[in-house]
Image (tube, rainbow, N blue to C red; front, side):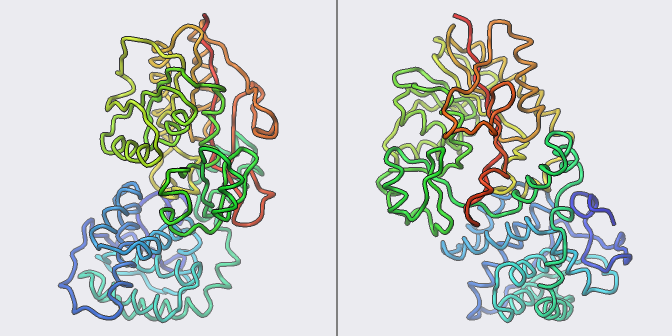
Length: 475
């Protein structure tokens, strides 16, 4: 069984190597048995069930994690603490799926029959609890067995699950420590692309950093040192503040008064490339979720934020209201957006493969395909060409993506400049303390990697992978 098949191809069960399971069929929408009477573990069962439901939707139905998890947790009416734990179970399982499955395979000797319900996801979630999250074995195992009993096609495997997880809790940690999770979890095509772009050694560092749960990064309106002290965080050289153990975001000091917003430190850099935007008209295309819109508004820009998702734009507006900031929000497609007046500056945070954000969105490992890169690069070319026509002469266009693929970054800008003789690249002018030379391409663009900030203490390392370039239009 190849790594690529195990991760991204047809579904396979946790079986010992050589025990094929091509005949084992998955039910696309497994039926659920009649509800059993409530028990003292009801909340714990709902929490695990939300995690398993989200895993099934990502791995089998190929749906984005944030969307399916929001529905799964809302349907089960999880308390905030239970919701956070369910999310942790699911994301830990996604980040370590290859290694967890390899360990589970050692405890199942025979091929499984057809129609296994959500057995794989139940085992995967339980393995994450036992081997990664230090959940007490009795809780993880008994609730996994309860989940089997509640699944019409999974209940016949309850005894198997009980036996496998008991053995896993005893000898699994040693087996897990000996495995190469990067090789087992990462798609081969993506590692090959990164090796070609950054070299094999750096590609492996990027992949390893992408499989580590990230810290919480915050952008503050002002006085980062004061807010870092109040929140219990550190100030990064870029100006963002970072905390390893944050708890619930809504309960942190400064949230209610709108002093800051959550935003990865790398995602906060593209706006800095503009310099002083106070009083300028700035168009933010593909604006949701709105961190960059908030940055621009906080710097005094007159912002027009455009996004095609009314729901995401509504949440952007709510966040701006909490922050005491304002922007003109427009529901519309960035490809067809028009304006009677042109803008002093434009930010295009283009749709992309998002391969630089796997550490925050591990479902990308299972949802993206090689063919997505050229398809999105073609869309990006159309978007940046359209944006160029909305900019005043002498204005600045900042293009950025959270992708690590050169076709969506460096090569995209080279092609744009070849098409537009009236634009020129403006290399980064920020000081090296804010954007180190190692984060700058040979042409002077921004390129951050998940492996950056590797010298920080454990729990505070890493950065989303971003590309950004500043383009100036001839007067």
